Amino acid sequence: MKKILLSVFVTLLCFSSAFALELPSGFTSIYDLNLETERCPVKVAAAANLQLTGPGANWDKVELYDLSNYKQMAIKLSFPAANGGNQMCLRFASNLKVNSPVLINLPSGVTEYVVTVPLESYKDAEGHLGLGGLLVYNGATHWTITYTGTPSNQDVTVQYIAVSEAAPVTAGVTTTKAENPDALVNVHSIAGELVRKGVKLSESTNGLQPGLYIINGKKVCVLK
Image 1 (cartoon, rainbow, N blue to C red):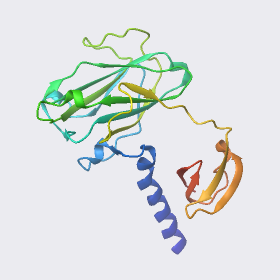
Image 2 (cartoon, rainbow, N blue to C red):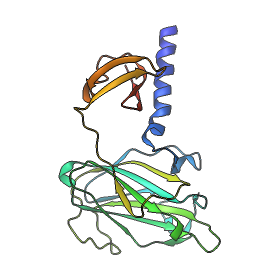
Image 3 (cartoon, helix red, strand yellow):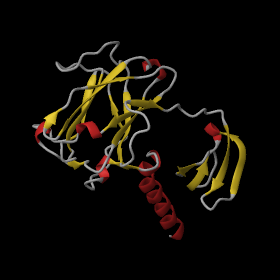
Image 4 (cartoon, rainbow, N blue to C red):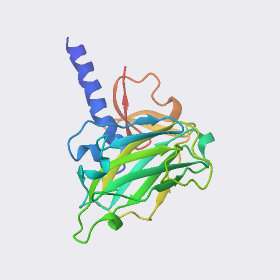
């Protein structure tokens, strides 16, 4: 019975940490602002669009999230390498109006991309910023969207939508490279004890007991 309870506890601990582990330091999931159920990661099919916040109707007539104290919104995307060089788009409403679409150029040579949206320019004269609906167009068309290149033609996963009170280092978009699966890493227990040394990242969790570990400086949950 104790083993069963321990297994359940570890599983719950892993799931409760999963989303937080995906976020960069200083960022908060947008869904946590109103204590909503986390919706990411979520896959968006090629040539499709998906609404991630706001009601189905009149999504531009509501302010669900108060972002007045935040300075940037980050949206992490992951995609097949073959989709590099193609384009996506964001459409969202702030302060009860629809903003101009944000065109996203997926870079070549990586499989992850972090779109950074500086929020200061969307605030009103009093510094207020309320976000309503937010939609991702994965190469899908809309009369407000003008693609300047090839629209995305592969599935894309939205890993998170997060906000931060810190100003973005650079305006616009930034990229993050995927980790090298053949890189040699060390594995430590959550208490800091060395478990494995100099193993490939792709093989670092093979055979480990369920629990939390520190691998390549990041917390990783291993399930049975």
